[in-house]
Image 1: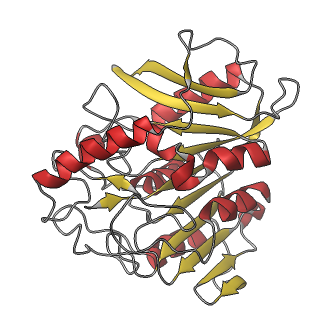
Image 2: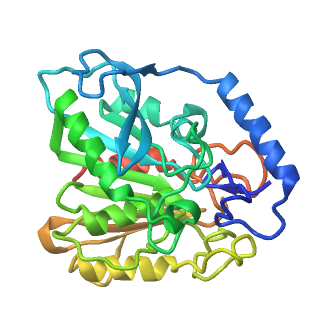
Amino acid sequence: MLLLGGALAVPALAQEAGPAYAQGAWRAGFRERRLDRSKAERAPSTMTDNDAKIEAPGDYSFAIEHAGLTRLYRVHVPSMYSPARPTPMVLSFHGGGGSMDYQADDRHYGQISKSEQAGYIAVFPNGYSRLKSGQFATWNAGTCCAGARDVNSDDAGFVRDIIKRLSGQLNVDRERIFADGISNGGMMSYRLACEMSDVFKAVASVAGTDNTRTCTPKAPISILHIHARNDDLELFDGGAGRKSWKVNSFVSVPDSIAKWVQLDGCQPTPRRVFENSDAYCDAYTQCRGGVEVRLCVTETGGHSWPGGTKPRGGAPTSTALSATDVIWDFFNSR
């Protein structure tokens, strides 16, 4: 079964999927989704007033109209949140074929737990989907992916709408808004860096390269990229992997990093800031505006979130580092 960022790909979307994907995987995808929903750790409260103040910690879900479409997102407000104190906010974008519920599932990415530990507001937007449930969604991140790309979904506008609304409902620290994502969601984070560097302090991408068509950031922005060298969907050195050759030819990791080193005006020679037997991180510093571009590479793990879990299939997830921890440490140092 093909997984995209830990989420099920579907033939109807043809998203990043290889030719071997067939009806059996489609049916298994629905069975697995039902299993995930039945084991959900928490059911968010649905807010009927999308502009009402959020006074209490907890989980909330929203449905808003944007660009003629009903769009969905979830919010986790940590227990230490106080309306009297500006609070950082992290928007986390699911992989292609996934949903906000999958990205918010602590069993896979641990982002709710990290929100509680670090005290930031965690937001899980849902990509464009033809389904009312929002399942099997994608992001319009440039040359990828699928339905969102093909209808030219206004995903950046949707993100701006979310931030505007939540900034009226919660005491958001507008100087500490961040974005991360996996696979197609990581690509979306790159698009936001290109188009919304005036809003986001830093972005992080896991297993998703920069596939934007144009990129003219208004200001320098810190970039973190995490990628497995043996990723067989988004190849480290670019092109179309055996699971994606009918769908997209991806930009390489080195080219994505080189692009942002140039855009941010960093020194071209990196400094090694972390290394163990299966992973390393290189930092490009002395950038304009004091930002940083950082690349973390795991030797193994395939197309996945290091330190997380996958429901089944593919290479085992790397345990050489925790993407969730590395991302927050990077954000928190900005």
